[in-house]
Image (cartoon, rainbow, N blue to C red):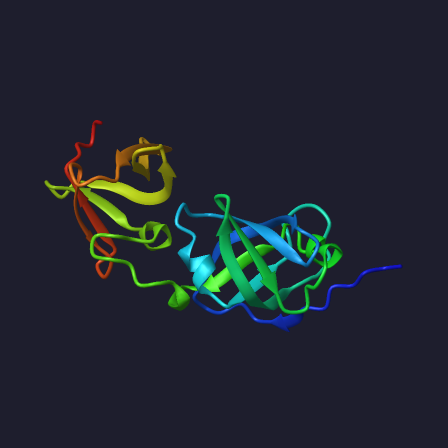
Amino acid sequence: MSIELHLQPSSLPADAVEVGRITSAWGVQGWFKVLTHSSDPQAVLGSRQWYLQPSEKGARTFSGTALLPIRQSKLHSGAVVASAEGIGDRDKAELLRGARIFVPRSAFPKAQADEYYWVDLIGLDVVNREGVDLGQVSDLLTTGPQTVLVIAFEHQGKPQERMIPFVSAHVDTVDLSARRITVDWQEDF
């Protein structure tokens, strides 16, 4: 007997952000585990509609983009688990394994003062107090006690990276509207 996954075809919203992926079934009633791309899973937990795309590798049980209405999502033992409409047993939940989860950026909870979503920092220009261009934010890393900005730049025609701790001792301002971060950091660090 073949088990089919019936998902509602959809288009990815223009402001969609990939926030995680489904890793496995959880329990026998159709729940599944989610690996989030952020240490704070509020964007996943707060959204009642997830947009799924198939895994980039491995078996594909659906194609294109699908809308998945979420019945419930919660933290359980440090992981996010969720249940969705139309996914009523473990076998169907297993068919979601590897699916990439997107939510509209507009559905993210509002960030507090001096808090930023990583997705909003990627691509920002970074300059020091003297106005020297240090490059663009290409990634962020969590190193335990702090987050680190990974800054991409070129030196003598070769791509390079520098890392700047994303802490108030080094970051003066983040101006999302100007797409610029000003830091207390020297070019030769």
